Length: 230
Image (tube, rainbow, N blue to C red):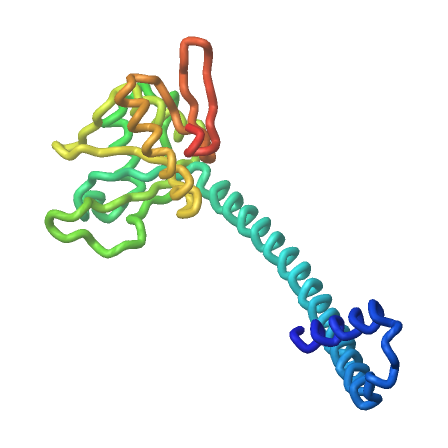
């Protein structure tokens, strides 16, 4: 670039002082300037080709990233649809479920929530502990995941749990939560600060699926999908 500027300055000087005798311009100097200009032109052409190739590669990468993001969202949606009838229960001590976790959960639900919660028999397809090491003494209690045969029963459980407030089973505090993917769980966790604020201001709220905060205000319900905005 520095050499290119010097060549340009010389050419401008000769153009502005065309009345100067051409004898002062040495042939070898003109040849040198021409060679430098040819080299610069060649380098610029090469740089333009490389920049064009990089721009094409960036375009391909941007499209690939967009497709990857779309596929990740689709996979996460499919995972959460597969967990649609699942619930998590936290607070039960290790091993309390015995050899038949599904039957244990069916009896627990009726005992804790009441027989009137369900129009018929509540059926559990399967139940198991979350895949994590057994908690040591003083650590957070184990998480159990169970899949209900009928989705409406899941909604009845969550609705009844909210109505009753704090739930206990054999002197153990227990909590019911929807079973969602790790990615969705992280998105829902971002609303915790807004939820704490709602608690302190005594504003009724609920966290809707997949990650939408609903506030019940005097002028009507208001919804937020952006935690910062909430």
